[in-house]
Structure formats: structure tokens, C-alpha cells
Length: 199
Image 1 (cartoon, rainbow, N blue to C red):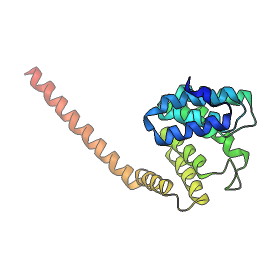
Image 2 (tube, one colour):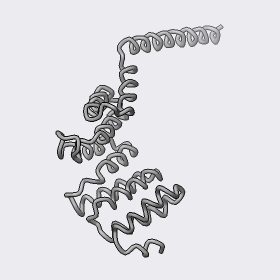
Image 3 (cartoon, helix red, strand yellow):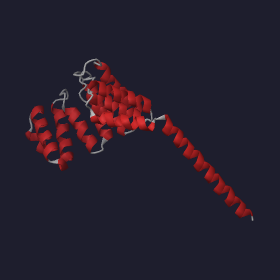
Image 4 (cartoon, rainbow, N blue to C red):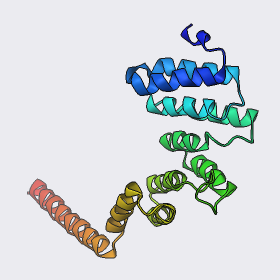
């Protein structure tokens, strides 16, 4: 097997990263190599995270979440892979579990922007989970928190603007008016059809 030429986890990770960056079509081989990394060193802080990342790219979200939960079982002190774990759970619509994982990561050190927990990306992932659940007001707060940590974060700013637009009371009133009007038209059409059927 190609991965056996890598006898250390660090060497294996370098090979994998080069393969992911330079040869985009070799994700499946990268998965095998990252799995080999986790066999060489189950405690390595980056092996599982990179494995989960490539699995997510391949839409193998179940495999990604299983790798992350397995790594946490082996080494509960390593949290490097938690963000990808939450993304994999989100992609499986396992919203409760995804919130639990990302919230745990954020709660580790919520006060400083340089910590594991308080990075912009973690707040964005939490916002994405809440948005997928339809909890737009909560999602807005998460994007706002991300912007507090980095006011130049364009993604959070754009998503927040979209959510502000769709949760605007004036727009909601307009949508309700259109829905009511469509329902009235449908009722008229169906009652007219019933009358023509009788005659």
C-alpha cells in the first residue's frame, strides 16, 4: 500500500496534505492515508481532523462523524477535530448533536479570540446549524458574535444581511398578504370548478 512508505504520523500528514492540495481528484487515497495516520498515532492532534475534513469533501459525513467520535473516545483532551465533527453532524441533519459538539468547543475558552473555542469559524458553524433548523434569530446572534471577533469577516456579514432581510417584519407581512391572496384565488377556482361539475 502506498501509505506504508510513511513511517511517522508527521510524514504521513505531509504526504496527505500535498495530495489534497495538489491532486484534487485523489481524495479517496487521502482518506486511506489519513486513516493510516490515525493508526500510527491515535493521539495525533491533526490526523483525525484532516481525515474528517476529506470525508466531508467526499460527502461521507457519517464516516467523518464516526472518526471524530472515535478519536474523542481515545483522547478526550484533544478538541482539534470538533469543528469538522459538528459540520459532519449538521450535514446529516443531526442538529442537536451538532449544537452539543460546537457548543462544547466554544465553551472551552469563550473569552479570547486566539483560543480553540472562540474562533470565528466555530461561531459561523453554530450559526449555520441554527439557520438550518430555521432558528433565524439565534443564527443572527451567532453571526454577530463572529463579527465581534472579526469585523472584516465577509461571510458572516453577508449571511447576517440575508437573515435580516428575511426576518424583516415588513417582508413577513407582505409574504402573509401574498399567501392569503393566493389561498383566496385557489378557493374561487375550486368553487367554480365544483359548480361547473354540478351543471
